[in-house]
Amino acid sequence: MSSTAVLGCMWGDEAKAKIVDVLAEKADLVVRFQGGNNAGHTIKLGDEKFVFHLVPSGILYPEKECILGSGVVIDIIAMNAEIEKLKNQGISFKDRFFIDPRAQIVLPIHKELDANKEALRKNKIGTTNRGIGPCYSDAVARVGIRFGDIFNTNYLRLRLENNFQYHNVKDYDVESLIAELQKAAEPLRSCLKQVPYYLANSANKEILFEGAQGSLLDVYFGSYPFVTSSNTISGGISVGTGFPHNKIDKVVGVYKSYFTRVGSGPFPTELHDEVGKQIRIQGNEFGSTTGRPRRCGWFDIVAAKFTAMLNGLDEIALTLVDVLGNLPELKICTSYSI
Ligand code: IMP
Image (cartoon, rainbow, N blue to C red; front, side):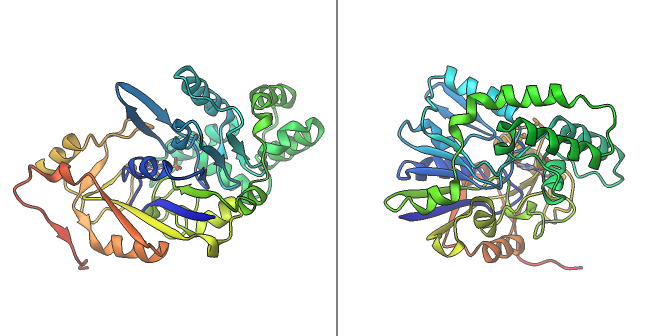
């Protein structure tokens, strides 16, 4: 067995998918360990475009197995739509797409809460409004619904009642939500897999862990509170899959040749001028999940060194160097002054 992780080391959108795609060719299993459909990337094969939010892009290789670990949060209705689209493009999921029963489910209430709380917030995070934060909050509040729970009607009812009580929601129709969740989950029943055991028993296999978002969006080590709600750093792999950290052989950190971020929060090297605009246009820096223009700025060595340290990087992949090709002058931030 050998295992490699590919992790974004900035605020996401480092073009990780390109690196994952190259390394997936040699892997047997491609595993997501955190995040949900707040992530997004597009892969072009010839003239065809494939869009991914939750499904690991390794699915494009017919012989690879793709896995969602316990740390991923799943909006099953959105995921079914993504799967359906990929199936229509000729991708087979049969016997090679697996989900840990422990993965938390994004409920309709999570999406409502995400939008409502963000609207009320004074310092807006700029969330993707996919219900990710409220879903992780419910997980740690121990009122979340896990993928495996959906297949046991009585237990699911109990868990949903707990959840609604916790959120003080009175006028809920628990039976129709049960029906909706079970209808969406039924086609995925065969995907249930005890991921920790499966990975531990994959002695002859090559495992590739695919990170979503980036280290500076990590809930503990990122630019809090302007972060996502999961552990995006290498330590998150163990937490989000049950794979022991000391069995991860190689951690590859992905950096772009310039920095970007979507949503709010500090960005020391942000460019508010024509150069920033030029980078945005040249690099097509518009969010793949929300379409928002990304904020662009110079490469920040202080932040880059920090995330290299957090992740224990063995290798670095530097992407999109060509975007800077037409600029007469390049700048790099080497220190901060207060
Ligand atoms: P949330 O994860 O939707 O709650 O969003 C929290 C913050 O993380 C916001 O600033 C988002 O713009 C940012 N974010 C979430 N997912 C991604 C991503 O895949 N790429 C870049 N930024 C992201």
